[in-house]
Length: 157
Image: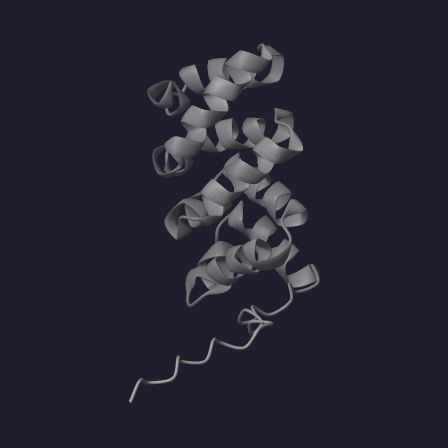
């Protein structure tokens, strides 16, 4: 199924199955897409598949797809620049919260990547969204432990 996601005609079949397939078919396809996100997200036909996965999946499955995309910076960046992938990235950015959204924004705005997004036809829409959307809260270090560490046992004399 991963190969179909990257095929110019096969990707349309996968998108249609995500839209009208049975719950079992959608679940199987979503699992395949998430497991092969780097391949699917970086091919030219894969952006439409990721967008369809986000459009037709449950909230829980959308979060899995979004985490798979955000987990690989090159996939996120490729999708943001793509004809169909940019729509998926815009949907993810509007739905993600907390550290995941902050990570996605950080990847897309880091270094020269942001200026390259602005120069790209579809990336320009993602860059505009990032400029207009309220910034995510800064990444915070984890809070300190609530309980103090255990004291060392007394040494026997």
